[in-house]
Length: 353
Image (cartoon, rainbow, N blue to C red):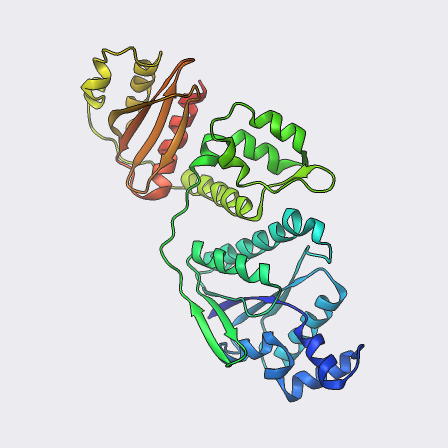
């Protein structure tokens, strides 16, 4: 069985207006139009009837307006009359207020979609996003989420009645920016924040421009939020935390001497390395899954942080004192992203000490 996540607009209302030549079509008129010409009555039924089966679960995501709510309810009733017994409505907090579209509306859309995707994944159901209906921004973010969550997205090109499927491509997640600044992202996500407070927190952070790319512009009250894509990445970061906690620890590297894990170039540095780097390397080397620590190039920064993790057990760390920083590559026995993330969390705790 499949779960079909469908963005839902008001095409039923608009099409009924045009067909019945009235500005205020009644619910009975919209029901009648759906019964007699479902392919023409709404973009939702036109697309859904082309690739779904009555045993599928249909989730209709609609905006927080009376018109959208009414259209979604009528489509639900129509589908149930066609023996689609599992049809649910999910209301999105997207009202007709463009001032809050990005800061609240689209963030709510991506959160709702992620919740439904993860719920269906836990039930091991096939998932399809139907992005035919709804306004254009919904189509964009629905497609983006489909790519990131490896979920196919269907779109009906109504002019030719052609159903197009955007199959997912192997796009990777990079949540290392949030791993480097977890307290900032937890802080901004936990409450409404003013731009003055945010700029104060960002001051001095070498990655502040990258962080700003995940934030909205100030609204009319000067408030800044995680952008929709920022919300997606932060939501994934929290999911990775849960996965890392649940997975078993990586195996031991079975290397008895700690110094054997540290590259000789680090043990015998001649060019005034950042203060404390060797002590830190010994702490990291004490972690059982760590196989090797290799030194990299220097950087003109004073911020110690994890820069990136990969799915093959590599963790990229930057160690800094008050004058300069050196890159480190930590090779571990971790397999896959969740295990690598688990070791990265351990290293992150060492960085805090």
